[in-house]
Length: 301
Image: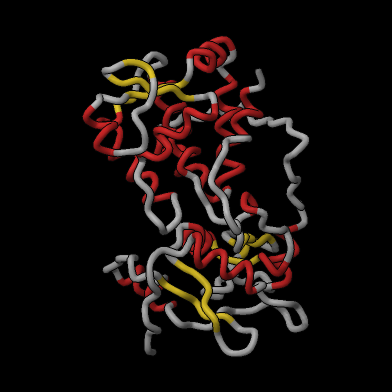
């Protein structure tokens, strides 16, 4: 059985590019717990808050109970649930999962495969991260679920995987003249740009293309905040866009105000003349699937 391929083919609800990372987040959490204790069961009532936190932190704006993936991941053949009554999940009801003492863990076949081939855990983790989250979140997501990922095993063989365009970064940075589209930062060490990154507006994992109409040159800070939904793109005059800052963001320090809050309503620094700005479809996807809550009103100088 090809567990890596099965991991890549988790059945997820999808419509119009909407994100549904509920199963991948639970799977990552379960792999982490296996890494810590291969025989441990995850009692729903015990892990519910951890899963709820992960969904709130790394899921889309529309909240879903962790009972949903706890029940439905069983259908993918990698997860099993039992209750005090015996094998089988009681359903997606939170009350039923709590009251029946529902507990889940990786299937016996998968646990055996992970024991035989320890690097398999790393390969499966890479698939879950690559297909569901942008690279800027991989490190902190592993920390959030408690996974210690071995760097030695990063390969994934799958004919169905799209290949990234390695020219994307240079193409985007050149188009934006090596400055952050949100704050104008343009740092270099000698002739080498430092702290500047090419951000996908519509994530690559969700069919976001490697082209200029889906790319922004952002500094490392604003790239992370953009991928976390703190910052977004709103409509502006003509082809220009304006910066959105989430009302959910809280920062009382001078640095938080200067680097984040005061960006609200500012125009985005666009690409060079003659190059097209972010496509409306990609901007709309980010607004609906990543941006958190409502935008703050524009700040005044």
